[in-house]
Length: 130
Image: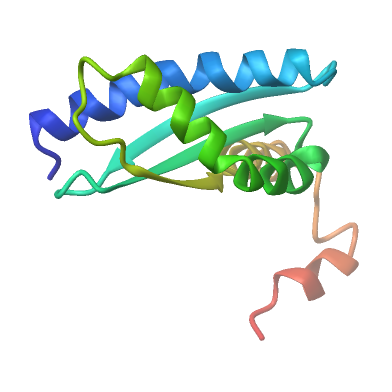
């Protein structure tokens, strides 16, 4: 269970991260790519912030995540400047790809019948447990 302090810090970080990442993407010349911060969770001791990113189109996600992770110190510094009156110490940032939208899309396609294992037997092999 998150405390109110954790929730407030996560909310502040989420808002500022959206600004920082979208500005960096536009200045970096990335057109047609949407980066959104879907969730930020902060540990109890406020030392680590796990940041979950939704990146569209999904095929660009891993490459962008590598770039974001390599620039983590710069992002952390920018956030520290923005939140210097609200936080004494900036948490360490850990970035992850949030693939929940892709997961939901796969479930919806399966429910609509777009992937029918009866008609396409190749799907059965993919769904069997190893």
